Image 1: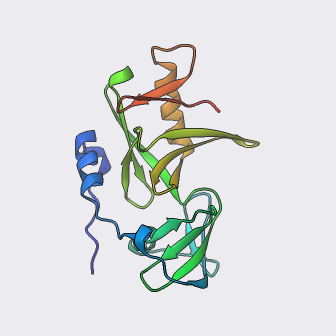
Image 2: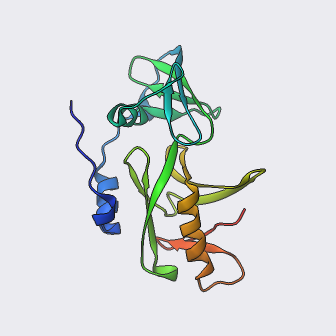
Length: 187
């Protein structure tokens, strides 16, 4: 079945993005509990590139299809799951990468939406929080996507968030507002 092309992120409003996210029908992976079948021989690199048996998966539609059956397990691992099989998949950091930011409004009235490397969209909110973790190589910012799955926020997008935080009204804690929730952006 062909996948519907994703609209141009630059032309969407944050309201359009919210409607797209709400209308997206994902498979019910949380209700599928088949027996574990082994390893998928797949890996998601830190930069969001998907690999199968060491080679990058070049077809964006294939990556998007696999991303929709990805699930985070209670033990922290990741699996690709269907109604009849469950296969482990290695994830170096986060399974998604937030590659674009769309911001509307200022201060407490701001709404921040992200486009992921898979074409999915997510709006930062209480249900989709932002968090930043300190690592030896610098801060790693994330946005919650669904079911324990997060997107690593790409460095240029994090810089956009930092610019918004520095321009914000609260000088004590650097952070950003989105959908009525404040998110500190310093680890």
